[in-house]
Length: 440
Image 1 (tube, rainbow, N blue to C red):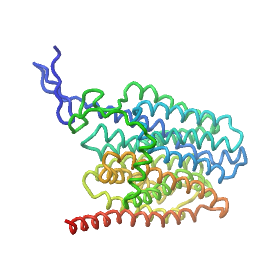
Image 2: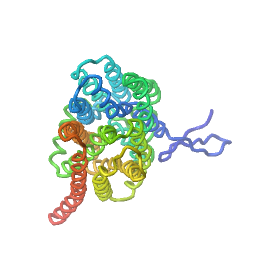
Image 3: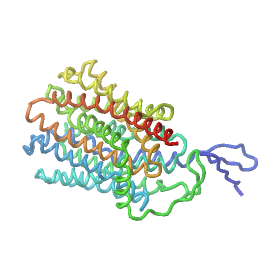
Image 4: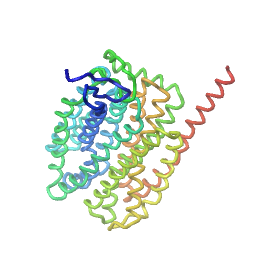
């Protein structure tokens, strides 16, 4: 006999006779690590749209509005697919859904190499890649966190959310260099290969539930694996209707839509072409976005740590308010060369980029319990709808006004509105508690 294995809260301990008690890494952390790498592989495509606006405009003559529309379709489907993907993971398992999603991303990125018309761009970038990335959206992180962790959920949420930024950090400079030296097609192939490379890792190491291995969630008690949930689409829609009857859902969805508008839709899509308008080299602008990815990792993990300790509503209000102020200064910082004030903006924006995710996810868990991953999927859908609108309207504004300045100012004002909305979530909760006390 090699000895018995005893489970404690969140730790598997070797109690073999004659050996010292030595904790081993809980399998939940291995699953989280696989999830982190998977999100990096799936997020590689997010590095491309901002880099390819000018090359596609030059080669095909497509307007920036047309190219922005393709990016907006991708972002909208990314969000709208997320809640259904969370339900599909309950029905068919995390591993199967993620493998199909990675394959869709690779297919869309590869097919775009042979496109000759703008409708093909919308089909490959918009439909295929949008469905693939949406199936691996933040609801994927929420599902893994909810199933595998009871303790340290805020921290794990922050780490997994930072995976998208890590993908940006890895692929933005690489893709920018490839586009600059070899054209946009090899960059698209690189993204496809990155998605495919993660598939074996997911299939071999990902597991759907701790009970599959006879384990308890990290920091929790052992529970039986629930039966596959049938009617995934019906459940997803039902959860939406139930959540839509509550005020907090609309406040969270509205504020998160502004979050998406001011990050993915605005900075990720239009920062590089805007900087290029001011004479900055594409590789330099892309490197600045990569720096955002560095500090995004720090900011998101730290935000997860804060979410475990402080009021999520106040954290969100601070994040949105500071983001709005920084955007108002951005037009004054644009220049052909990178100066210290621009670096300061990039560092700050990186810290704030998706720091909103851990507290938003925590509020969904707090209010919607077992359905929180699906509810967060719908909240994320609003995030991507906001991103899609600004990705499209930002390109239109550039075509009409010849500058992105109006877009920066409008986004700053929207962030101020988001700060007020998340504070209203707290006021509404307190009002509800007072009402319950009076009723009692």
